[in-house]
Amino acid sequence: MKRLVVNAAIMGSLAAGGLAVQATRIHDAYGAWRLTATETPLRLTALHREYDRSHLPPTSAPPWGFESRGQTDGGGTILAPTGLKERTPVVIYVQDGEGRVWSYGLVGGP
Image 1 (tube, rainbow, N blue to C red):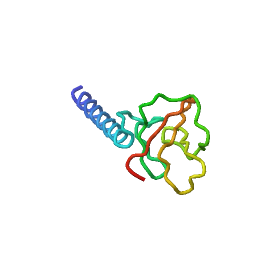
Image 2: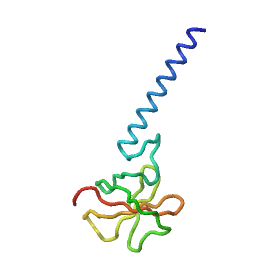
Image 3: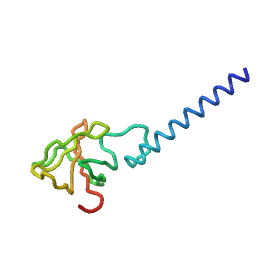
Image 4: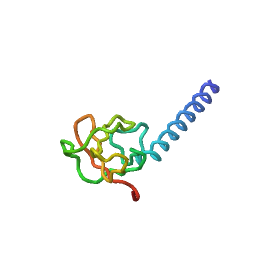
């Protein structure tokens, strides 16, 4: 019986440690304490740059002149201005599965 309790404690400690590592990894990458990536994370790496989500509420439709340029790790659609070619956009949008569109601003300078 004592061996069973010790083994359960060890397994519980290992599971808690694994969850802590995963939560830390997600926090470092996306700025939120979670176990999985969200569609619209607080911090996003897209188009080879980092973007922070604005504090503005989401809109119900993307602005005109933006096109899909990929997906977030959580499944959101990244929208960037059309016709930029190789230039870095200062503002991008991410549309979630419910149709809400969140704005993001470039971190640092161009």
